[in-house]
Amino acid sequence: MLSARLCVGTLVLLGLAGALAFSEHSTIEKSFVQAQHECVAYLNLPKHRLYQYLVYNYSNDAKTKLMIRCVGLLLRWWNSDGVLNEHVIAQYFRPDLADATYCERTRLCIANKAPEGDELCSRAFETFQCYLQQYGELVNCPKIVPLGDERLAETMHFCLNVLSLPLSYFENYTSSAELFLATDESRCLLRCFVIRTGLYSDHNGPFAHRFKLQFGPPSPDANDNDLEGDYCVTRLRREGYDECSLAARSLYECYYFADTLLPTFERILPILKIVMATESAATAMNSSCCSANKIKHSE
Image (cartoon, rainbow, N blue to C red; front, side, top):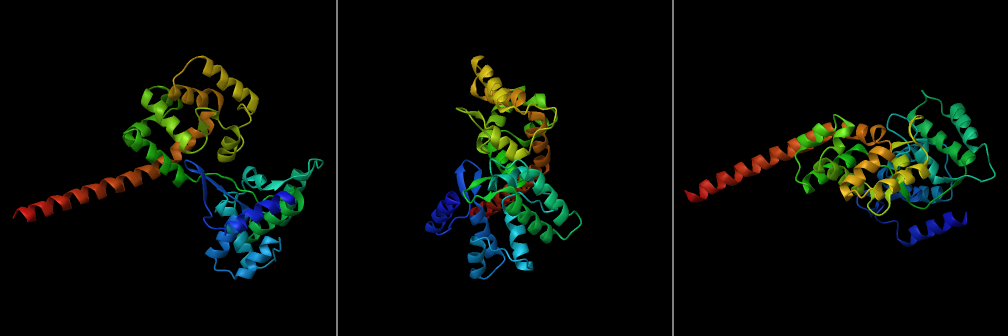
């Protein structure tokens, strides 16, 4: 409990201001306490509720259930359709090292107390209670929050602009995983994206933990050995690739690109099309307005 208290104390001293903490690039870190503070504000709950929640007093009532679901949505362990992301919620709890059955007990608890078909807020609340009672100690230090598709699309939009690439290039690349290895532009676009999202750095290579947090555990037939992944990247470094090529080949050969990043790119492409079409329309409108004003002034 000491580490949790220290983290809570630090957050209180900071006034709990700025609930989003940007650690690097687009990476977001947020603690459970910060998320609670935000959700109490969003739901316009009385302040005494927040003080109750800070000491783990979660009453079984409608407002608390709303708050817990809100926290799960903010920290992205709970989807809007009621799907639990076990790999995300797990990082907010510290199991007892001597406890070998905490996962099994937690899943059994959820199956009994929060079955599919129950009302979403009740399921979110009961699921959290199962983790609180069965999984381990609640940890209140900030943890990395997986990025949603809107933020991922924003990141790709940024990289396209930085590298002066049209959307059509990205759309073409997403048709095949191999195309991201094919050209300097595609390799550098991929490198920009994974650096910006905090999944990769030139110094460290891919961050295995962040990959699993963002995309979930790999498929059974994919390489899930972090040491093998590191060895694979080290081997590629020795081959003398430039930075963009090294990033692209590391992701493609060592970190199951086709199961993680490629499906993500396919999902965010429609979002990018809407955003960039809106931008183009706005730019065209501004240009026509400027031209009209010039004509008026000349007259």
